[in-house]
Each structure stands twice: as C-alpha cells, then as structure tokens.
Length: 462
Image (cartoon, rainbow, N blue to C red; front, top):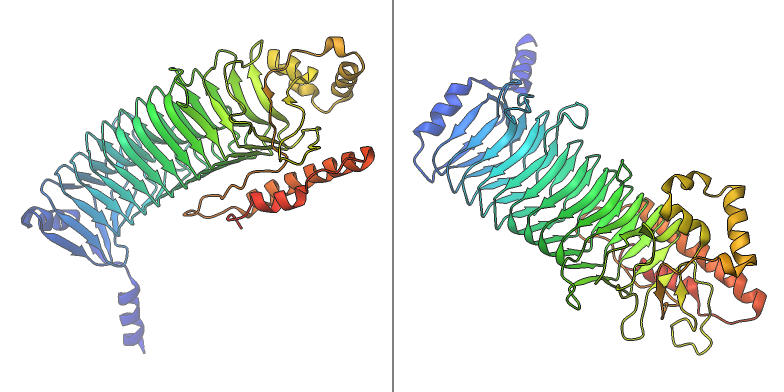
C-alpha cells in the first residue's frame, strides 16, 4: 500500500528541471528544430538565439523565480506554444517581461502568463502572431504594473483571441498594418492604446471594466467594427477615445455603460468628405453617448442608435458642433428621446431632432454642475427653458431626418457576449418605447411599433 501511494505521489508531483538543462537543450538544437517539452517546472530565464519551435505538452511551466525576463526570443522565425510563463522580475526600469520578442516572424500562442510585470513585449519585431494567450500582471497598483502587451515598431502583426486582464495597458506604438481581432480586455487601464500607428483594424473585441477601452492617437486609417465597449469608467472613462486621427470607419460597435461612449478630439484632422464615418453603432446607457470638442469637423454620424444615455451628445466648450453630418441622403440616427412623429410613415421623423436642453448646455460649459443632475434644481432649469423659450440655448446639433426605429447591431461574434449588455440595451429600448407609446396615445398619433425595433436592434446578439 505504501508503495502504491508513493508511486501516485511521484506521478502527481511536478517535475523540476534545472534551468541550465533546458537552456542546454535549446543551445544544442539545430536551427529550425522543434523542441517538445512535457509537464514540469523549468526554471528561467531562457534565451533563444536561433530559429526554434518550443511546444509545450500538458502546460509545462517556465518560472523565472521573480528575477529578470522569463523567456527572450532573440532570433527570427521562432514559435512558443502551450506554456505557463510566470514569475518575472518586478523592475519597471528593466521592463521585466514574460516573453520578450526581438525577431521577426515569431508566433506566441496558447500560453498562460501569470505574475509577470510585462506580458509580451515586441520590439522591432514585424510579421508576428500573438494568438490565444491569457495574460495577467502582478498584483500591484495599476500604475506599477507593466503593459500586458506592447508592440513597438513592429509592423504587419496579428493579435487574435487573447484574454488580457488585471494588467496596465496594451500598447501598439509606431506599428502599421495591425489586425486586432476577437480579444477580451478587462480590468486594465487602457484596453488598447495606439499612437503613431496606421492601417489598424480592430474587430469583434470585447473591452470591459477598463479606465479606457480603446484610445487612438496621431495615426490614420483605422477600422473599428463589431466591438463591444462596456463599463469603461475610470478617470477618463471612454469606451473609445480619438485624438487627431484621420481616415477612420467606426461601424457596428456597441457602447454601453461607459462614462463616455466615444470622445472625439481633433478628428479627423483632414476634412475630406466621407473620411470619418460612424454608422450602425449603438450608444446605450452611457453617462454621455458621444463627446465632441467644438472645433471637431468632418464626421459623418449616420444610422446609429442613441438610447438612454443621460446626455446623448455633449459638446465640450461653448457653441455647436457645426460641420459634422448627422444625416445623409434623407436618413439620420435613432434617438431614444425623440419626441416627434412620422405622419407619412416613411420611417423618418417629420421634425428634426435638436439637442438644445438648457441644463445640458450649462453642464457642457461647467462640468461641475453635473452634481445637480436629477435634482430639483435640474428640473427647475428645464421647466424654465420650456416655459420661457427665449432662454433656450442654441442647438448643439440637429439631425434633420431622425429614424423612427432603431438600427440592428450585432455584438462581437467572436468574443463572449455580455448578458448584462444585452439586458441593459433591451431595457433602454423598451423603456423608450413605452414612453413614446404613452405620448402617442395621449395626443392620438399613431407611431411605428418600437417594440419590434427593440428586438431588431439585438438580433444577432442574442
């Protein structure tokens, strides 16, 4: 009996291998060779200086013991797959990382990163693939953590099917022709932060509970399609931030529960027709659906849903956002608080949607007044504006052809859908439909069915 238990204990116990033995095997391998590694704990740091494939079977562990980098790939054409990579050092000065990639055409796939300061760090490493990894940082204050993922001067890379959580940022700086697809980012500072990056596609990603979901700075040619940006509510609290970028398409995304769904500053910086479009997006249940600076011009915002945001569109500063199109070809956006009607049943409201609430105008000029939101003072100001039209402010913008039914938007198809997101969006639409229905009943005007529209907006997301 003792022998049996001893054998079971031996089988269950992890295999410990001295780091120099693993390194010796790597050093002895021929370029292009595949090294398969079985279960066990292998001590880092490990350095690869020739093209090799390291394949883990049964999730073997590479553990740096809290010092330096765990794995350094100095050669081109490497692959690391199927490992647990853990316990890097904690020096921000040396930027200790789980995997440091210094060569082109490298694949880092299907690994788990645990207790590492920086996760995957690519420097001048083009044509790389970061696929199917699960990355977490050290249990430090968020500013003391490293970046879960960082691309620096690394063009033509694919970032796909990764889960990034409890890190600091995922950075793509000075890197062009990047595809970011079906990733999940949660409980970080910046989900994805791009600066001086061009020709970037972000699609079907889920970014939730970060300070900022996606922030784009100083680049051009961006496509954001099918992303879900949910409950990003840190000090900035942007689902999507855009600063001085150009040539972008924002299509079919869902912004819900953020402090600000989308923040637009100096974008686009060239005002070519059709250069900057927002279409088929849903902004639901945010504090502010979209914030724009008064100098922003050249955006085409058409065919979107704005539902149950405390403020649909805010203008930061004085004045209106003239020079942005809210309708094209007789078709505008769906506004959950639109009070007009559609007498001829052509699907568009017969009166423009105008954003001219007095309290909103005051808050845009002095944000601290937001403390009075939903207070008796708020109600009194809005009552005065209705009773004395002379005090109503200039409209921040006007949608000349508001839609009477919402636009269908499908949430990220390749990433886990959030039941809370669906419930929040559905609840907002149903509440809006109920209010409009009561108003229609009271004045005897027959409006289109909003209940059908509420289901339609979530078709494909359920």
